Length: 173
Ligand SMILES: [Zn+2]
Image 1 (spheres, rainbow, N blue to C red):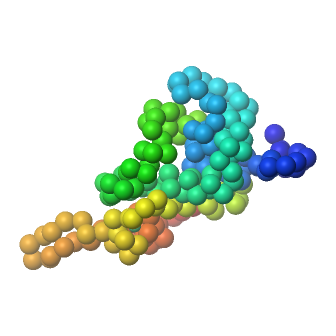
Image 2: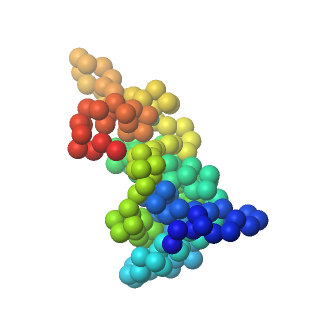
């Protein structure tokens, strides 16, 4: 399982499963030979597919896409996904069902194999692939209220640190 002991030859980059965040594992699974059906697989099998996906995408792209995937999820939860961001998301993941299976398997895999301190510290990293509804300011004009004017809400991606501090230790990374 510990592939860091593998011989590094050519383009093969050693991947340590523990160092991959939940979203990175989901992105890797989507890119792997994992079947799209909702069948149960062994932890070893899912781990092997994750490794395969990372080899296909490369470590850097896996990390970038992982942050995009989590950012998309956060924006989706607050109904703040812009058309451009949604389009790019669907281009990367045309098969919605497959992405859901990849997500589920990634979450299970993290449960069984754990996260290294490094992966844990990055597990809530989010980024937006495209122009965010907050334009990078951290606040999204949410609604208009008489007497108050436009009421802003904090962007779940670009104001994540503020939001986490407000919510307290329950959701601390
Ligand atoms: Zn934003």
